[in-house]
Length: 362
Ligand SMILES: Cc1cc2nc3c(=O)[nH]c(=O)nc-3n(C[C@H](O)[C@H](O)[C@H](O)COP(=O)(O)OP(=O)(O)OC[C@H]3O[C@@H](n4cnc5c(N)ncnc54)[C@H](O)[C@@H]3O)c2cc1C
Image (cartoon, rainbow, N blue to C red; front, side, top):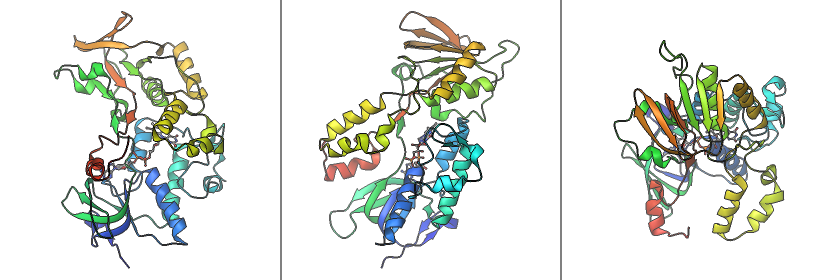
């Protein structure tokens, strides 16, 4: 039997170099996979290793939710990392006030505590190896098919590897890429770089309110707008299409057999990809977020601008001058683009060697 020994106090040093399954990343997806593997392991045992530079579970998730001041999840109570779909409902029995209608969406603290309880219940507290995987080397022979290389230079061999590395690189609008290097980078950033807890958004004698332009029509842009307004800013929220109001980005039928049956029966990967794109159909605001935004609009803290695209921006006289394709020109102090992130398997650095040895159709 192969024994893996973890020692987090030494930066997650692996004392043995083999495992059955290596999971890269320790976010909610990795935690979900791990608990499901452990549950199945009651019948058939799997050795596994979870690797994340943070050395702990869900660090990025906690950071993102705090940075964007998100009070509760968009997903309903049955979506969580425990294999028992009712586990969060049972856990929340004495915390009903932290469940939000409709579908009992869990509050951030409740979900955090629940995940902590799941980690403890499955005895996973010290199971995250604090390493950054920088290379996956496919091995041509032997029992172990992959070698994972860590930034420190050590490595781990695995029979199977699961990538649970999150959403990939930010989508950067072309007008951002065209900006000269001299533009102030701290005044323009992707939503994932905004930390509302740290941001200073109070104005001064010259400009009583900081003016922020937020680009995007998804829930993240809404959270940032409301969070910034709460901290004293004046916000213009702009999207290239009409704002959509939906409880979930995709129809709830996708959670069950209604649509998944047809999806699973589709053998063509390209058509599957198209089905996913059609189902997602861009970002949207939940009805309660839309209500908050309309209220802020009435209070004159927020301008909602639909079907408008930026042509170019330039830094002029200590603020951004924004030119839209419809000819509109205005000024603002900061720009946050909530344009999402995309994982491109073809470009992903960890998959380059795997693709070279096992070419797949894309
Ligand atoms: C603002 C916001 C709100 C959201 N709200 C909800 C919601 O209400 N409900 C819901 O279900 N989902 C929601 N989501 C989506 C959900 O948070 C993400 O889908 C979820 O965090 C993804 O989990 P993950 O495990 O795939 O990735 P992550 O949480 O991003 O974790 C990935 C981990 O991989 C690690 N990693 C990356 N590269 C390497 C490497 N080379 N080596 C080792 N480790 C690596 C990272 O350090 C990170 O810890 C929201 C997302 C955002 C941004």
